[in-house]
Image 1 (cartoon, rainbow, N blue to C red):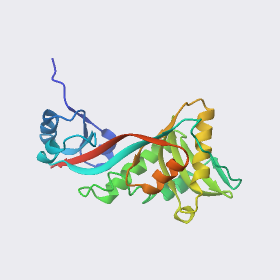
Image 2: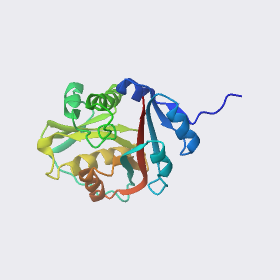
Image 3: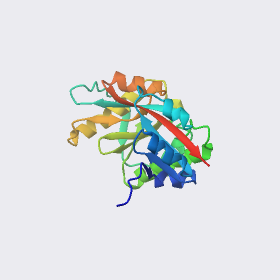
Image 4: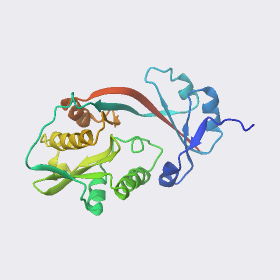
Length: 224
């Protein structure tokens, strides 16, 4: 019988990082030891309350803490504005331009062992997949494209707003509109996954009635 491996390849990361990439399936000394014997970039997600001693002993370093905002129809505090509309009729080139440099809170951007171009490529490929599957909503203000939200099923995945439209309280209208549309499709919950360092988005979700659950600390290790 073939021995069960404690790590698995992540080909989508491999393509972007241009080196082998893996995810650890468990937090154990065996998994960490296997990772150190495998060349490439390794990711592990652990509870914030877990003892991090083993991670430090095996050279893993902290990159991010992810939390999951979630909301039900009864909790949503929706806001509407006549000038704020959403549509899946988008220009992919404009969407990709808006995304450039927008994901600085992401774990790949915060990994000091990775070149920024690799981090940009990772999120760019993800966004491209969402565009190809028609899962991107354009955010329009007075008919002008101001940002986007990528959705996969009931999850809000990638999103960005042009700088000139930030900090004005406009995002609550767009996020509200997307949530309302997802609930109308029959989803009982809308959720996302965001960095705990992204305070503007945390505040946005909180203002809309989202609660937060399932925190995870993300650690990386680069094995040459």
